[in-house]
Image: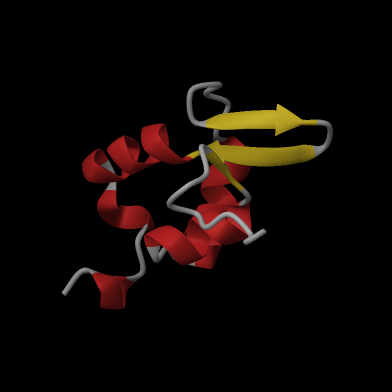
Length: 72
């Protein structure tokens, strides 16, 4: 059985979200500490998980989280 890829998952870990969406680790770290929206970030015990589909829509409106080299 193969491990699920980020494209197949509904929720991503912060590390998976950073890699999948090509985000700035620093900016994402600041964002996730401030973000309280249950539609974007779900709490599972002490872990924070990112709703992949809702976050993709959020990034369309807030591209500043992406790494500078990915804008080109």
